[in-house]
Image (cartoon, rainbow, N blue to C red; front, side):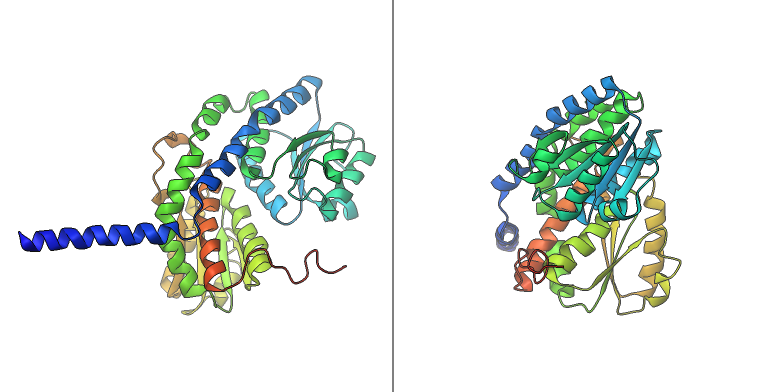
Length: 352
């Protein structure tokens, strides 16, 4: 009886200690409010898309740079595999320099800019307007130059996924290619609480990863399908830009055509595995790297429970889940490396 009481006491102590760790720089109320603001823009996006569809359009262009093109590519993966929408995804700088013969007066361009003055996006908006195209913009600053330049504006900086997903899926819905749209939108109303819990559940693993690999000489981030864009975004736009860590992004489909030869026992490899049809690609990568490297970290959306989301939508929302997990990685890396995420050496600090 005494032994049982002591074990019970120790178990409760560990739970309490875990809760303290989870609370580290975890602003739950702020997180929930941020996600809710993302949900709150959906009606505005729907109204814009519905009006465009009534007026008629020819094709869609997703245009971005850095992180914004990464978000666009995640929804591009969904559109390409589920829709016949005439969609082109363009890097903003490339589009201005090289052009695209499919861009014309019947084109609808979709862009995002948190600052509202991203140089390449401003230039791209000016360029597509010379071709007669119209622009939908998700802009963080309502008083910014881009808020004034785009034809249809949604202001906010809290919900990039909510913006890209609602816009893409609404165009598909209006084309008769995503009849589950309303049900899907109803399901994701539960995401703020679900993602909050995912962060809590993933936190210990995120901290372990940050502690072990905070000073790794180079790390390889691999993703496929609708997580390919996020693997690129997290490696380059977060860890390289915000932590000055040396990384390389590789798509799961390209991994076996070059990168596999530089993996050895000591190489840090991070796999982002989701639940869309590209999972089979990542399973093949996982099978290989586990045999070669002793430093493989797997973040798999399938490891997390979200009861209030219909099973058929799990694959669709993998980007939401993986981003939430990575936000906790970033918190721990920031602390363990003593390197605030907001610091830059060159970006917006030098003329170039």
